[in-house]
Image (cartoon, rainbow, N blue to C red; front, side):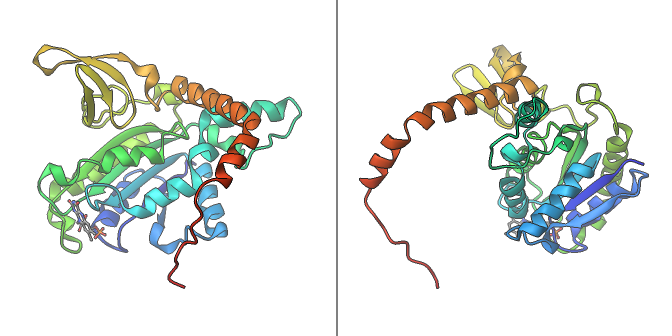
Length: 289
Ligand SMILES: Cc1cc2nc3c(=O)[nH]c(=O)nc-3n(C[C@H](O)[C@H](O)[C@H](O)COP(=O)(O)O)c2cc1C
């Protein structure tokens, strides 16, 4: 039986958790709910426990309240503590190859082959505001929860107008949409990354399907994932390079190679770094205790 993990970053029983519970129920699986507020992400045993939940699941549905236009801080802490190189599919792929060749990789992070299993995801974000400008960065940041592990995002949605406790319950459309998100995620369970169909609203970017854009003259870069293109007349974008998107294995592999090259170069320069560090003015930090 497929394992679906629900990760709730809001208050217990609050609006974000309500839509998450509806989505989980709609997967038709024995889904589990983890409330981020129940975990101490500064405690190693809690981090290890959550890591097991992540690498053992086949689908991840994350729901966050929107805080200052983006996802809740607990989710960013999770990303910083557990993901990045620890969970990067290209890095793990390289290190697993080193291990298969009979050597143990000498790196300061987890080398867990389970990262490479196919997984799908869905994102829910619930804000109090009715206007889009208070929600802009919620879904873009949520992609940091999935791209390292090369998890295919099936569906993603933002709800608004839920600024008082549990008030999402007044929004029938939102409740229906959350249920649909759960069913959408379930419909793609077990598929390999490139076979997964995206079932959310289209958006501009062909990779992450969001529409937050970095514009330099006519050069376009997707702010969420790094897909590149050119702005044409009438605001049309020709997406010219999907291999620069951090959602692609091409970009993850290029990044993994770059990290290794940089580390190799710095290895020889350690004495210079030590010498220059000694010349930096010293400060004893002030602390509250
Ligand atoms: C510190 C803080 C910042 C918030 N910032 C935003 C915001 O930028 N945009 C928005 O739409 N809602 C914002 N809200 C409202 C919450 O997203 C909203 O109340 C949400 O439904 C709470 O979810 P919960 O009850 O599931 O925890 C903010 C709330 C708090 C407490």
